[in-house]
Length: 284
Length: 270
Image (tube, rainbow over all chains, first blue to last red; front, top):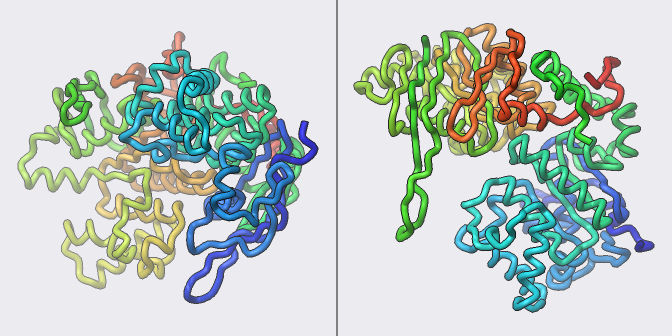
C-alpha cells in the first residue's frame, strides 16, 4: 500500500484565454483518490468535469491554462513538469480512457500495432515478452482469444469491444490510477453493463484507484465509493455515495437524483409485469 | 396503415479496395407496421440494424429487397412530386445535435427552411410561424437570432425538434434523439416529445438502446437483434412467457435502482 493517495489535486483552476480576457472554467477543484477506491465526479455537460481530467494530465488545449492549483501523482508533484516529463507519467502513473473508443484508435493499424506502439513509446522492448503482455492484458478484459483480437482492425470491432481494448491498453503498464471519462456513455445498454462489471473487477483485483467521470448516476451507484458533484466549474457537494444519494444537501444534487429516480420509477411502472423475474434483481 | 415495412433486406459490402468484398447482411427480412398517431419503440443493441432500418424508412437508403409503404405508396419508387409530398410528412431527429444544424445559419433561418421549401408564407407570417414553433419547444422568440454554437446540446435538440414538426409531419423518426443528453436535459426533452405527441398526434418511430428511455414514449416495442425484429411487445398486454432472450438481455442491462431513499420521498427501489 502506498502512503500517498494515487492522485491528489488541490485548488485546481483552469481558465480559457481569448482576445477579450480570461474566463474561469474550473474553479478551485480539490480531490484525492486512494488506491482501491473509486471517486465519481458528476455534473451536467459543460460543468468542467472533463477539463478537470485534462488539467490533471497536463493535456489542456492551447487556449486553456491551469491558473492555480497543484496535482500530485503518488505524492509527486506533476503540475510543474514539462510536457515530455509528464508524458512519461501517462501510462505508468496514470492512464485514461475516454467516451468514444472509436476515435481513440487509428483505423489503418491493427490492434496489435496499437499495443506495440504503446509499449515502444515507453521505451520498452517490443519483442518476445511484448506479445505475452498484450495477450494477458486482453485476456484480463475478457477476450478469450487475444491472438485473434491482435490481428483485427478497429473498424472490425464493436464499440464495447473497443472500449475493452482501450482499457487493456490503458492498464498495460500497470498504472495505479485510471481516469475514466464517460467510459460507458457511447455504448449500448448491454455493453455498458459489461464495461462496468469489468472496471469493478479490475479495481478489486489490481487495487486500482479510479477517477470516474460520468453524468449517469447509476454508473456512480454501481462503481464509486465517493462522489463529488460539480456545477459551473466547482465541486458543490461531496461525500460517500450512499450518504449523498440518500440525503443530498444541495438542491442541484437533489434535482439530479429526482430526474434519475423518475426515469427509473416510470420505467418499472411502464414495464410492469414484463419485468418478470428480472424485476428487483440487483446487478451486484 | 401509415407505414408498412415488408420483407426489407439490406447488406453492406465490407473490405478494402483489394480485399474480398463480401456483403455483410444488416437487415434480414424486416416486417413492421405503424398506425397513424402511434408511437413505436425500436430497440436493440448497437449493430442490430435499427439505425439502418430507420434510414431506409426515411428513404435515405434503398433496401436490397422488400418494400416500405408510406401512406400507401412504395416510398422507394415514387415520382418526384409524390416523393416531395412524402418527404414533407416524414421527418427525422438524429442523435448528433451539433451536426444536424448549419453552423452558419441563425436558428430562425434553420427552422424556416422547411417552411420556405413547402409553404408560401409572407415574411411576417414566416416569422410568426418560427416564433410559434420555438414557443412549442420551450425556447424564446429572441433565440431565432442566435447561432447553433450559442446553445447547449439539449437546446439544440429542441431546435431540431422544432424544425422536424414545422410542416406537421405524419411520422417522425427519432434516432437515439436523447441518447447524448444529460439525464436532467434528457428528461425535459422526453417530456417535450410526449407533450407534442399528445397535442399534434404525430406518429413516432423511436429508435434507442435504453429501455428506460423508449418506454417513456412507446407502449409498443419492436426488439431488433442481428438484422431481424425478433419480438414485438405490447406493454398494455400481459406478457406471454418466454420473453425473448434479446429483450431479456435489454431488461437485465437496465441498471438497478439507486438503492437508497428517493429525495422526493417515494421509495427508489421497485
